[in-house]
Image (cartoon, rainbow, N blue to C red):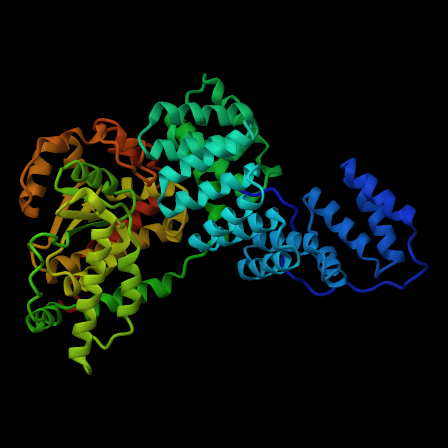
Length: 593
């Protein structure tokens, strides 16, 4: 998760503050008093004096700047003051930087980036400004630009521990885990007490399979910041909770005081408390914590259910059996691949989140002929481009050529991801690609698709108990989650009817856990890949796993997660009813095949 860069903040623009009547000019003593109070961190007094001064001197910029500082330090809204200060001090880079950070905290990222760029124009050699810009770019998902900004900041001042930490987060998000580790370690070289860098380092080491070192880092983060919900949340994502464990001694105390925390920290703490209580068998307390955390996220991240339902229906109505057969029959044979350097054959792993897809990929990626690429976003990007094509009629030849080119682009991406491994097969474990199986069949007829299934209530409960890094907004409300699961089932039933039977392979999580060799042999036979005993030792591989299941796939198989929902049977009854009503719809033939 991206770290938070400690810098003064402001918030999004409101209406301008009304201007009081002017009086005599402030004196040097007034400015000296504000500076002294700021140095002493006496923000209550700083606010009082700054308010009095701007009431008497409404165009005195230092007063508005000091008022914004005092309000931010006390957790209050500093926007009107900083807005006035920025208006009065258009050439002050610190004011514009503070305003940019405030906008970033509010999620107004475009405005924040613009404010930071303006500050940098005024003071291009000020390293912290480049660091602040980098954090806004990181939050906006502009990863290469964020990395460049952080690196520019460190060129100007290599001793900035927070910027090293944030560069690590940007590299981590970009998938360069080795470089991320190096950046987190440099942050700790600059500041050995940097709790967040320890937490971030522990998380990425866990994903790299360095379990012991990861746990030491996560433990150190808690020791350095025992009252920080972020440190506790990161540790509890990977380390089982033990009520007698000194590392988690502050959890319940913090949770009792959660109303005084920010919404973000209440959410972190809620999911952590739920996981901890579930781990020691206090299921009612666990569900109450999950429920509160999910409610807070759902309020912040609404889901457009109607639009999503319409989209899935449109997909099914377009990709009928006749439509797919017509297109596939009209596609000219693909040119032969060079024998010395063939592009890989893609294996898509799809399904609902938390359905066992990470486990299946880890098993497959242990095979010497298969490279596990993790969750790639390219198919979703290509699907967006494909929606603009005339698939049904019109420029059929041009559309066919475009789809073929998109398929080649995807295969080249797999080839690049696999790198020097020389793997003949590459997995793409993006669960939501179940929406795009018709497009995959057109672009990549040689692809194989593994559909991961798990008991529906267990799947939904596992989604509900997790805060996803991004997306999956439907998981934060139980009834919405149930309806989404029914839509997913319905679309998968459609794909089974219209796709070639050799393309789609269903795999049950429960079968894999209980009899892995039998299930895996069936999968490899369907894939046409020779059997290799190494796949049964999947937990020993050192490949990186960047999903929430990273800790689980480092262990031998265990059946603890089977029947997870049974511990919450009463609370999940509304969800159970929705799933039961929707089961028939998933088998409904009303959509043309």
